[in-house]
Amino acid sequence: MVISDRERFYKSDKGGVIYLLPAKNFSHNEKKGLGIYEWTSRKNVIPLAKLSFPSALEAMQNFGVKVYFVNKKQFKNFLSLLGEQWNDYLKNLNPELP
Image (cartoon, one colour):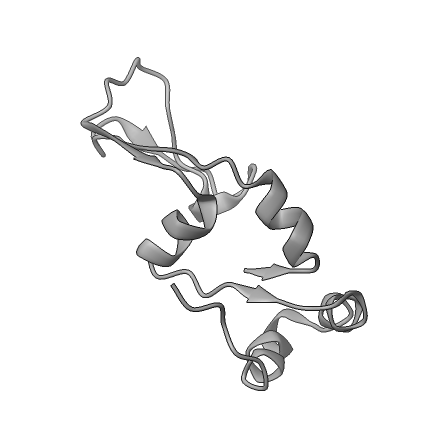
């Protein structure tokens, strides 16, 4: 995750909730939405668990997301890259530590 404004992010980070859902009855359509990254169910689903986090940053880090805070120039440069170039760009940056 690349974020262009650390101060604004921290001010607006109110946390959130992640719901763990059973896999049964979920499917995806590779030609719709986010393809294999978007799974839906036509049936009602009862969550298996609810994980609350006081901070979105904390939640991302707990689940292995590397968060990079960059300045506006770096962010603009990052957005100009093709997807396969992102990892090379991020190798030169240090992720936010928990």
